[in-house]
Amino acid sequence: MKKTAHDIIYALVLLGISAFFFMETQSETFQISGPGLSGDVYFYPQILLFLLAALSLALIVQSLLSRARRAEPLAVEKFAPFLLTMALTIAFAVLFPIVPFLVLGISYCGLLGFFLGYRNYPYLLGMSLCFPVAVSLVFENLLDVPLP
Image (tube, rainbow, N blue to C red; front, side, top):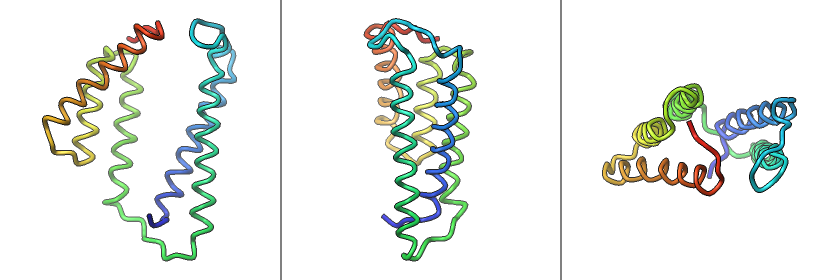
């Protein structure tokens, strides 16, 4: 895999996201005890955010150290799927409290797969249906976390 400016941009975006959400877990509204595998609901998200930040830093370092290779110029047609994915994910996050999870999840999975170029429609439809239903079953039945 060629190391390009894309790697550094992706890593910086993920590093920013992990820093933002890690700071959010430090707020008083997040510092509550609740049901689940741990009494402290901020413990697992902080571990995952720390791992995301560490892997993002590792990607930046690896990209900078391998800078001796010829880097590809940043092309808009290669950056467009990333921007589209980010826009779709932000729309998902904004609509999450308003739209029922299954409707939003099925729409998100289907649109994301289509925009990323998957054209095997039976497979795309099956995964768009199965993944949100599986997530819903796990959260609502196994973890006892209600979804909107």
